[in-house]
Image (cartoon, rainbow, N blue to C red; front, top):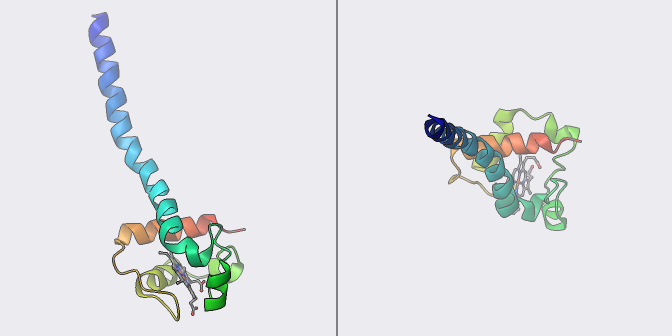
Length: 107
Ligand code: HEC
C-alpha cells in the first residue's frame, strides 16, 4: 500500500512537471530569443545599443514604445520598419512572447 502511494506521488509529480515546464520554457524562450536576435541593436535591457540607437531604435522602456499597441509591436517585429529587419521566421507564439517580454521592460 505504501509503495503504491509513492508510485502515485511520482506519477503526479511527473505530470505536474510536464505541464509546468512548457510554461516556464516559454518565458525563458522569449528572453533567450531577445538576447540572441534583438539585444545587438536594442540592448539587453531594451534601452538600445550604440549601434541600435544610431540606426534609429527607440528605448523600449520609454512611454513612446510602451504606448504602442501589441498589434503594432508584433507588426514591426514580423515585417520590420526602417532599419529594423523583418523576422518572418518567428512563429506567432514567439512574436507574442517577445511583445510580452518588451512589456516587462517598462520603467
Ligand atoms: C539591426 C538592428 C536591429 C535588430 C537586430 C532588431 N531591431 Fe528592432 N528596431 C531596429 C530599429 C533601427 C528600429 C526603429 C525603426 C524605425 O522606427 O524606423 C527598431 C524598432 C523596433 C520596434 C518598435 C519600437 C522602436 O524602437 O521603434 C520593436 C518593437 C522592435 N524593434 C523589436 C525588435 C525585436 C523583438 C527584435 C528581435 C527579434 C529586433 N527588434 C531586432 C533595429 C533592430
